[in-house]
Image 1 (cartoon, rainbow, N blue to C red):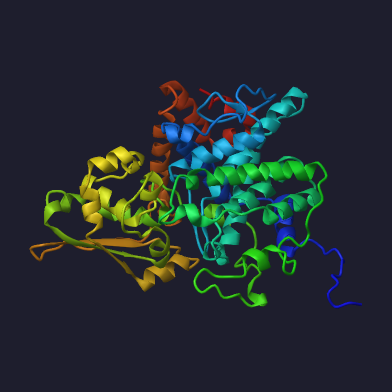
Image 2: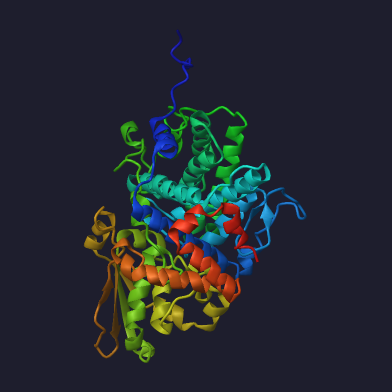
Length: 494
C-alpha cells in the first residue's frame, strides 16, 4: 500500500469530549455550596446585564436580526420587551451580561467569565419552558438553570486550569462556546451521541483571536464576544439535534485536529510544541469546584486582575487626593498575568481600552475614590487629563510570590499593591490587597455587598415593588429552584 494513503478507520470520540458528555448527562450536583453560589451568581449576572442597558453602545446590538420578526414562545431578554428566537436571545443576554466587565471571573492558566454561559442557558430554558406549557407539559424550573450554570462553570473552569489558550492567541470565549454547547444540549434533550456531535462541532468551529483584547487593537468586540460564543453554542446544538454527524477526532486528528492546528505553537517563541505536549492537561475531574471558588466582581466594573489594585487605590485616596500635583511616582506591584494582559502605556482609544488598562483602573480611584462604569466613557476621560498624567508616573513591578500564588489551588490570589511617592521625599505606606472581596476567602464579607449590588442594578430598570419581588424570590433558595423558568422571566420583562 502506498505510504501516502490515509487510513480511513473512523475513531471513537476524543476522550476529552466523552468526559464532558458523561459529566453533563450523568453527574448529580450534591454540593450545597455550589448550589448556593450558583444562586448568587444568577443574581449577580442578571444585575450586570440590567446595568448594561443604560449604555447605547450596548443596546444598539439588541433585537431581532430582521425587524418585526415574531417568534412563537420567544425567549425574553431581561430588562427589555424583546422576545427572540433562542439563538439571538442567547447573543443578546450574553452581550448585556458581559458588556461592563462586571460579572464573575475565573483565573487560571486561562481566564474567562463562566457566567457568560447564562446567555445560552437562560434563552433556551425560557423558550423550552414556554413550549412545554403550550403543549400541556410541566415547564422547566429554575433548578435546571442553576444546575446548568454549575456544570458550565465547571467545564469552562477545569479546561482553563492547566491549558492556556491565550498563549496560542485564542480568546477564552472558545471555552464559553464549548461549555454552553454541552449544557444547552442537555437542556434541549440531546442524547449522548447528539451531545458529542455538538461538542465536536464547537471545537472545529472557527475560534476567536484575542486581537480585540490587546493594545493597540482593544475594542468593544470584547464586550459582545461571549454573547456570540454562547449563541453559537445554541445553533450548533440545534444542528446536532437535526441529525448532523459529529467529528470524533475534532481534537486529536493528526494535522487537521484542534491540537495540531490551533494548540501547537506558543506566542512567545513560535516554536512547534512536541506532539506529546499538544493535548490538554487536566488537574482534576469535573465536579463543582469552579462554582464554589468563582470570583465575583463586587466593588468595581473592572478586569479582574485589577480588582485588588482598585481596592488599594480607594484605600489610598484620602492620603493623596489633596497632593495630586506633588506625586513623583506610583509603584504598582502585581502578578505576571496582570502585566501580560492589562498593563499598557500610551493613548487609550475607547472605553474597552480603558477597562483593560491596569494603570487607568488604579489612577481613577486614586483621584476620585471610586471606579464605576461611567469612568471609562470618552466624555469622562476627556474631562480629566490628570488621569493620564498619573498613568505616566506609574511603575509596574512583578512580585514573584504574587505570580506563584495566583496559580496555587489553595490560594488563587489576585494580588496587587500600590505605594505613592511624593516630590518632597515622603510616601504613603504600601497598601497590598491579595484577595479581592469577591474571592471565596471573603464570601462572608462579600455576599451582603453582592446582594446590595443586585438591588441597585434591579432599580435601574424596575419600580421599587418589582425590585422587592425579584429580590425576595432570588434570595429564597428553595422557592427559586421550584419556580418555572418562564414565570421567572416574566418578572424581568419591563
